[in-house]
Length: 275
Image (cartoon, rainbow, N blue to C red; front, side, top):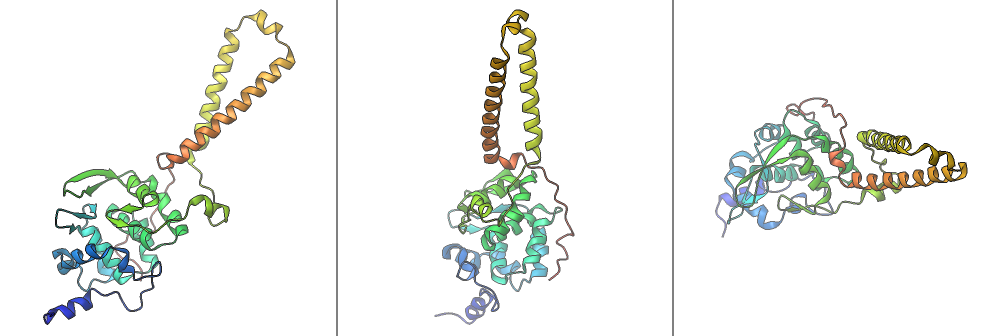
């Protein structure tokens, strides 16, 4: 039998009435039931997340000092995960979430917005708003399952959100492949600012090597070489160069978060988001 205060507590843990379903279900159900129960019973949830609105959520987000899921043998939730569940409960507007992501002054506010968007946003929005964050190389603290802390980086955290199925002990919804979205013209092909510089550097090095070989080659040998043979050698060199460029491009795509350096300016701080 429930006590007198438990019905009111259950009401406080319910999703807002006008909330939209995410992936065909209640937004809070994106977090497993056992973890939700631990969050509802946690001290941080009862003291800091009760009656929390989207405006007050910003202040709590700026107080975060690390990211993490659950820790300890009794599955204790971190404040970061508690605020994620609170955002799923109150479902803030998309503009507020975007302001969280674009905020450059508070890195954990950015991480919170990125994590929430990964859980609730479409594949196009995830690639559109999260990929630029791969250029953020600031250090962040992550609490591991055993309760200890480790240093990580924001770009590694974003890369996990885009490629891993489970992040911070929560199963992320399936994310459509970027190549499929590009074929459907929903996304533009991804380009790196360093790609052109790397290709120019590689071509200049190859030209220097060719010039060095020609200088070291004996004059008689160069004279005996026929024009048709020289033309064929240049054609073969061009084909091998294009193959090496394609292989290097594939390698750069696999590690693209280390090559992208686009500038991402914030429009305003998340301290006063517009609702």
